[in-house]
Length: 341
Image 1 (cartoon, rainbow, N blue to C red):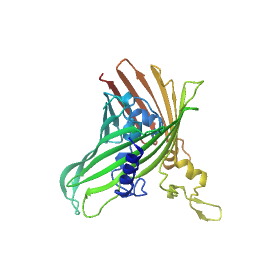
Image 2 (spheres, rainbow, N blue to C red):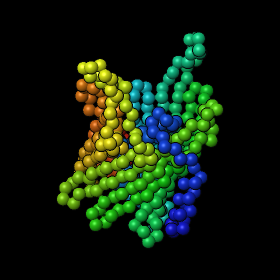
Image 3 (cartoon, rainbow, N blue to C red):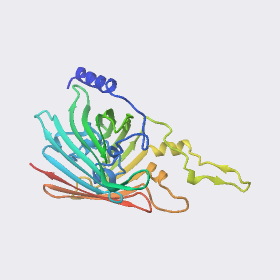
Image 4 (spheres, helix red, strand yellow):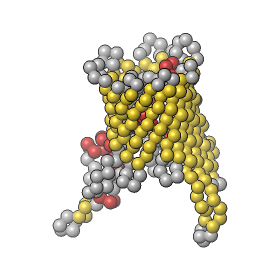
């Protein structure tokens, strides 16, 4: 890919789509921001910057698509909350000897069964709700620059009872490796697009995000660290929690105060991976925003913490993650990656 091609691609993405500074609760298709694999969630849910053969990484950063993923397939399943189930499927294929690689990904969420009632409380019928996304991604290196660029094109569908919608979206990513310190840096623009079919009469925005990620494998220790800054398109991101209103001895009511440091941390995810290239590896992550938003006063519930492991065999890799959300519910995520070569 030449510089001219890159500039044209960038202009197409930045001017042919609608940009929204949306976070959870302010846009539709929120399932797009669920971690696509156990490895991603075990590292806090913000893995953006590790360049290896993990096919699932193409969901969150298309510039990580590379020839090491060639003819590998990833299958992941998450028993989310209650009867909600989530899954993803990814496959990559190397197009030529120059390393250009095509990535195909599919993820879905099923919200289970519901009983319908009219405005008078009379039973009508049972119905279900589900959403899915089909993505085709591609990456290539820029000529004469140590930068990789990648793009995903996505078709998103959603169905709830008699209402359904369709949207077109894209992800755009940049990856750079600083060779002296082996530091990886990634910048990703996710979910750029709009609905082409509305649920009803109102057009709803997509969960657009700008994310920045760093990672580094240490030279003298079997450790890779990750730091991701999410939702850089919006500041502040924190809202005062009504459940944390305090009253002093004089009866004065005071809302929860969110400091600048707390705002910064809510954008931050950290993760550590041990023995990454070994038969057995361990992963730990901490999502500050999840921890802060799901924290319960005077009760320790370890929200925001996640951990997992990977087992690598000859042609098969098994991944597992346990993630702490609240005292009411935590999740387990499992996945397989199979080398078809």
